[in-house]
Image (cartoon, rainbow, N blue to C red):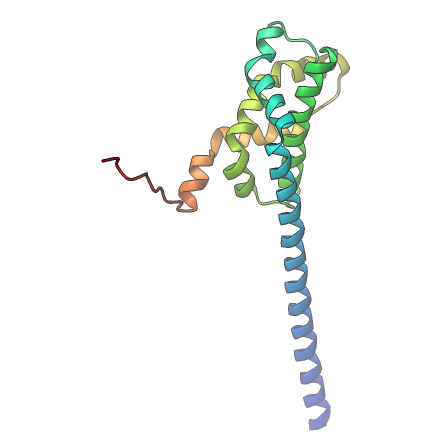
Length: 170
């Protein structure tokens, strides 16, 4: 009888240890996947095409189209700029909402850009929603709402990021 109890106890310990190791491996794999995805995003946002699209969306879209139309009714060039920026941030928002990527990581890295992009394109997106009765870019809108309440600066303070001003010139 004592032998059976000891064997059962050893089996339970082995099962718990295996489960903990498997959970640790799962977390490690998730982190690796998240890092790979995030580095791909960093690469895209550094590309000249992406930067040109951001510049267009933030500084020229409303100037060229002061009366909002559906973003799908924009000429091909402006529409592609809107799509490139908006869909990238919408996909990031999707990853955050579904718990795949940490919210603070995205806000700390892209928060202001997400917010500014939404402010620039919201009238065109709302016009599209009105015309076609469908929801487009909901994750971008959600992330813009979140970043209006929690800024990148808030995340930087929370992470205790330090500043290091340059030395004074002599």
